[in-house]
Amino acid sequence: MSESAIKEMVQQIVEQLATQNSGHSKETFEKTINQQINEKIGNESLSVTDKELHDITEQRLQEYYKVPDPKEKESYMALKEKTSARVGIWRTGSRYKTDTLLRFRADHAVAMDAVFSYVSEDLLKKMNLFMINTLCKNKDEYITRPDLGRKFSDESIQKIKAECIPSPEVQIYVSDGLSSTAIEANIEEILPSIMQGLKNEGIKAGTPFFVKHGRVPAMDVISETLDAKVTVVLIGERPGLATGESMSCYMAYGAKVGMPESRRTVISNIHNGGTPATEAGAHIAGLVKEMLRQKASGLDLKV
Image (cartoon, rainbow, N blue to C red):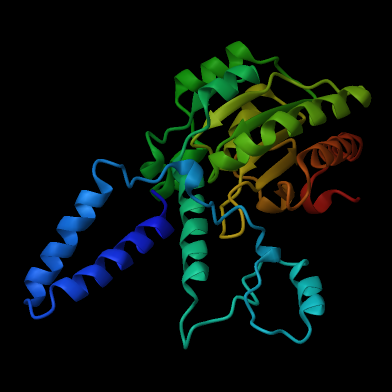
């Protein structure tokens, strides 16, 4: 039964009872109303299916505009198209409007899911990526112990050595980081794009794999373990309230444990609303070529 049908039915019953039960107590009046409503509804379910619910996160924030009677809406919308910031959302008194608050809470839920969910094992199998773990045992430890997210057990190091090609020109791996959602949204497009770009440049890549509970500096350990010239990690970015699908790519030439952060080159904001995955993949392949030519990365790389 639809919401409008229920409202219509309730109004009808109330009008009837207001006439029939005038002079009765409030408790008796309400009891009679509830009884008649239940008889009308019977066993018909009032539950709502997912298909009937509107997903408020589907609308782009750039198109979310609630200012009543705007004088320059077209100009405002042109400015909004350049940012996902929550501007033009209006208010009720000093508070947000209800749908604005619900959208904020929904986007926050997306961010929480991105951090605390895991990348599907089916996806890793489809991408032919074997998995190793850092020393973090779970997400809570990953969040509270960043130092463990950059270290591996002896068993994991031995697995890397056993499964991967030694001394590759480029070693690429994927890591969940702070957004598994970002990996699931981008990896199927960006990894083939990078591999094809490297192949076109005649650059030999090592065996790609997946690191669970990984922090960026874990790439230094992997670089030393495999003696890679350039190491590339595709890792989920810390999600904000605009998207949970944003991924970063960190690259370093001759990465070593304890090296300064200035030796890393990074491309961030890889997602459909930023730099598309396929385009980013081609750009990454070009940067790797330059790193190998200049034998440098980070601030030392001249591009």
